[in-house]
Amino acid sequence: MNKRFYKKIVLMMIDIASFYLAMWLAYVIKYDQLKSIPPELTRSLLTVVSIIVGIKFMTLIVLRMYNKIWRFAGITELIDVVIACGIGSAATMGMLFMISRQPEFSHILIPRSILVLAFMMDVAFVGGSRFLYRLFFHVSPKEMRRHQLRKRTLIYGAGQAGVMVLKEINTQGHGEFSPIGFMDDDASKKGQKLHGLTIYGGKSDLLKVSIKEKVEAIIIAMPSAGDEERKAVINAAKETGAKVSILPKVYDLIDGAVAVSKIRPVEIEDLLGRDEVKLNNEIISEYVKDKTVLVTGGGGSIGSELCRQLVKFNPGKLIILDIYENNAYDIQMELKRNFPDLNLFVAIASVRDRNRIDKIFDKHRPDVVFHAAAHKHVPLMEDSPEEAIKNNVYGTRNVVEASNAYGVQKFVLISTDKAVNPTNVMGASKRLCEMVVQSYAASAASTEYAAVRFGNVLGSNGSVIPLFKKQIQAGGPITVTHPEIIRYFMTIPEAAQLVVQAGGLAKGGEIFVLDMGEPVKIDTLARDLIRLSGLEPERDIKIEYTGLRPGEKLYEELLMSEEGLGETEIDKIFIARPMTLPYDELSSALDDLRNSFDDPDALVEAMKKIVPTFKTPDEINGAFDGGNSD
Image 1 (cartoon, rainbow, N blue to C red):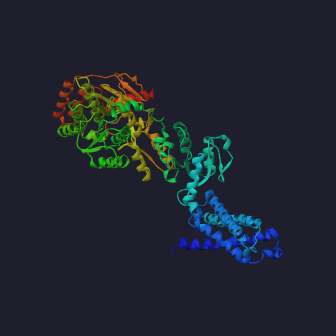
Image 2 (tube, helix red, strand yellow):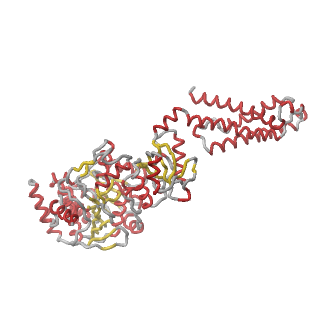
Image 3 (cartoon, one colour):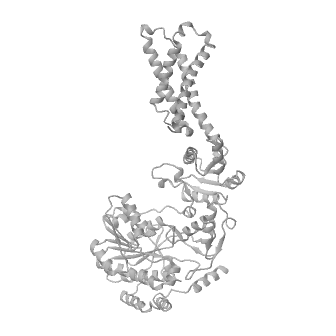
């Protein structure tokens, strides 16, 4: 028999004693002392009281009052106690009423006032014993030691979500948080008490309160707040030096339940908070619903998110093409689990292999193609420029030509801001991909071709944020290439949603440019991540500047000056003016690049002839530094 069984036996004995005590006190209250009880009421009194206690005890058993974990008892459990005691008393009254009508039991008399007083005592004793246990549990030396080890925590948001977070933390009985108070922007709540904790004020009071109360953690419980409001609170919280966690947004709480397990660390995505993307579902459905959609590089960070977004619009078939089987398998299993009725096919293949691409297109006849397969790591491609050409450029040409040959309706290339005035092989190769798409679209192609250009994607494979997190977990240092380097950022879901939306706008040869918001200093991101982890830059985590990597420039652009920029009917999506080059001429120039594969320097020079905006990093970075110094 386990420890819990013995606790249950002890609790049963306490309840039986409580029922006897309640009856005795009820008589004492009514008659001042037991000697004053009328003789006619004392006949068989002990027997009758024992029967009453038995009925009440059986009521608790039937209502499963001994199957609850009372150390976490709250208002719900108190209501259960009142109901159980009430049912027990009602059953007692019913029993006494029935037997008192029988002549042989007419001498059994218990005034109703005694039963009412006993009911009140029952609630006090039965409920009190349980809540005393809970109190003992929370003030026990063991529990006090646990609380001392937990972080002194402020809950930002004194609303329903904040209260639910508090209750979850208290009922867990473990974890890293020890709530000491609330914060809320509603000035009318300041100074009030909520579940015994003070509401200290809003954002302007946060730093002062955190210092005074020695706050070690802040939980932001504002799931229904807007992005700008959450961003303002996060900015205030990061200055306190406390570890900052956050409850997901309302639409991310799928089941609507608030649980400590759903509280997560604040991410840079929260700090950069941008308005939610508003999609035109009708435009997307027109070209995706019931169609066969192929995503190359479908196992990568962007490709897999494209698949997640596309399935929401009910494609007739989704084909994931990727050379890396592990990534492809992961997204395959995820989609099968979440969308069991999805018609899904996974093809392990390289876009370099034209014969394999032709077989896949011939077998599945895709209507829509999203081309996300590419090598994208700048320093690696600097050392292996021929691989960037083979995979990015020739791979794109293979898929572009196959799309036209097999009757694809829409083709969308995933491009990058590094294609604008490129200073590295990767960026130049992606600019060549754009040129392939634009020039082929200008030919007699029946497929509608377009490219979508955006900046860095937070959390994608190889991006700087996951690297910073690993470096913080390891105790530092965080490595930043240059204190002034800046980049555009957006989240993976936002990028994928806008790519899918842009596909509906494609008519032929456009380069769609996504609104990336304001550029951000990488150094600022690193420092923010350190602070949000409850640490102090340079004191707890050092920052080292390692110098710009080969091919890296201080800033990125989204548009070349000669392209121009126009608006579309969708917010956050702009369109660059198409630049045409005869496809035969471009294709011939690309073929000539093969002659330079054995000499990386010659290959780079050959690329510069095809992409006139391809400059050295010194040319671009020097101009940037000069602009800053003026």
